[in-house]
Image (cartoon, rainbow, N blue to C red; front, side):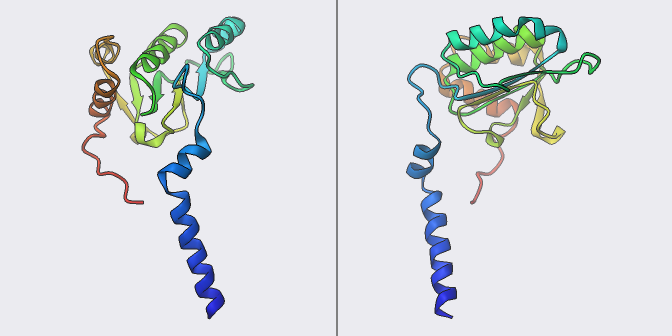
Length: 175
């Protein structure tokens, strides 16, 4: 019986430790002194494959880490990739707008936002198919233009993003 109690206490202790903000932040932190984008995943149409070096060079010029699978392409006859974007809550408004511009340049348009609370804070995904339809909110060109407004502060940008995705009315997670 005492082993069971000790085991349960150890689980509760470790769970509490791992969920403390300081420990989680230090375990997953990246250097945000140059850019607040720590991870970026991009899916593009096959026609963009010939621009791979250009895209990688652009990302590197913005101090964004490029891994082997950072940029991936749809099959030649796979149609057009999704026209959505996921922007984490830890991005500056400037970095978020940079990601939006990148998506517009290489993926033609954005007509959907992936809910912020589903992704890491310093994460960007362009044309992601990782989430179901309930995880994405359609947006209009006018709403996208509002997000791209350079006058928005970081806080205003994320408030607008959460308003557009209707996340502002979702209760905070309890775990």
